Length: 449
Picture 1: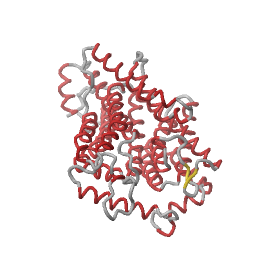
Picture 2: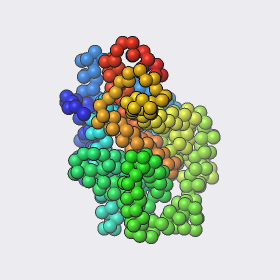
Picture 3: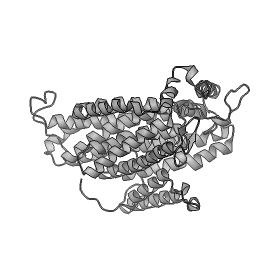
Picture 4: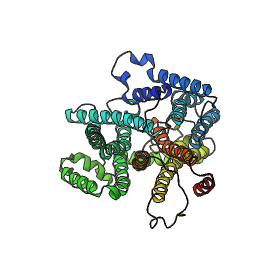
């Protein structure tokens, strides 16, 4: 990966991300008044727009994901007048989702190379590893615990409760392992492994049932990819995991048992979740076109509601109940785009490898057709990163079935990191195709469909 010129928009994106995930304002009194995250976002967008206009480019690239994110935001505003609390719906858009939109726009435009994608991924791993370490440390010390010993996030925001903490840790583990198993400096690989272990410890310390199910889904997908390339690593990891099982606290197994056994649920949260799912469906059925307003399900209190003032605890029912079937369709589209982008990246990498294989292996390829390629290092990056993203998305999807996280930063970072590599790969292949003989270029374009 070649060295790139300094891009202030990208640097401000990194600064914004550090503020969002490390949340220094939670630790340093008075820092919150400076609004550092907002300042970094504004500076990054300003640098982006000025830089693109100076090159006679439109102020932003247009991608299907960006259109979907903005369409969902515009729908929030359009439905606000029909909300049960207009001011609350507008406040959620202004204080939360509008920032999602702006940062996603920034990511779409600055994640233009493998190096940049890797740097943002590394920053996320560093931040999530730190939060995981803090959670494990708090659990060992008996600090920051709720509900019979469940650890809270060491900072607020998207780590503010055990379930959200677990979801973010599940998402981060494959990204940490992405650095741990790739060739490179020993210190970086060791840090990736330690970060993954701390995140795993935080999932256990949170005692989140949704996080545990997401962890299982993530591990299955990760193994499906890893066993093809590093089978010895998978078997060694499985052996270590089995040896470590006796170290898992007993109360963790007891809480997981409550997934299928009501009698093991000491807090009544399992029954409460059933009520919330039923009430979320009721809100959607009663307000199929408009929903009850962005962020307003907790304020929707019809007669007979059993769990008032609580979130939906299912990401899709959250969106459906609050933004109606239109909002649900848009959110499902964004989730599908994330998965499709990862699948498209992996398919393209596979085609390129087949194209460079011996003739006997390329039975389905036209032997005389030149195929543009990217560097081997970049190709390995796209392969490994897409596998990690597939596992992260699987973990997020299952965990999010038990959490109200539709407007949180996590999904929009995952969406950007899933979509950007495919765009970068296709740009590199397009550039490489221009070096092919003219007669071969149309045949290449047709092959790509």
